[in-house]
Image (cartoon, rainbow, N blue to C red; front, side, top):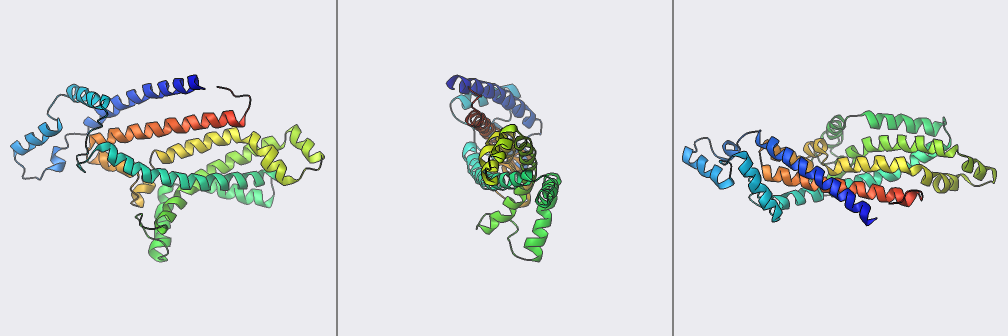
Length: 304
């Protein structure tokens, strides 16, 4: 197990190094941020002082070398926009996104597994048709359209929910609901398809012939054997939210890492962009590792 984790960590570290190099040089191609942070009437001397203070007057290769040196000492740089450590800014935003992902994916996982399993038990029945219909709508509906319509209906017209922010529990309802729809539709389809295959297996037919009730057949005998492809999709959807649900966070003014990355790119806050990339990459590594461990727990044939 330790060898497997070490190999995965090494592969992720190599990918992260390449990603950091790519993002560092591509972000610099967006231009000099000096004009964004100084007033229009700033003198040439003030602009040069600003560039020298933040190291923008040096060649790119020199800036990169300095950044790598600081990184090896655990210094991720400072945010130009907020005048505080970049990693502190990123971790604050990532905490919001992490809670959003945990709440959303917990609800999605429970609902999709239960409904998908029940739909697969009687293929072609009324419940199966209704579940399939709504799962197809959820999987194909664009997030930005659902978010805008939800704001217009529930916030503007009905005044039931706030349009944006994080002040109360009601502020979380619309972001979680919008993020819930697409993963729910995708995971439900995977659960249904996998369960249909498993419920047609010989051991399930034997259990039915012995008079085993429907609930144990579905949730004890069938579900565990159907969970491998489901775990993969759940992990992918969770990683997508952890990376920052950019559209949803922007529309609802949610202070997550997705919105932070967009704002930092537009305002050329390079240190924050790079720190956000590293935190997101680490989150993906942990998520993939958890998926692999879940494989081993569900399937005794898999050993690391």
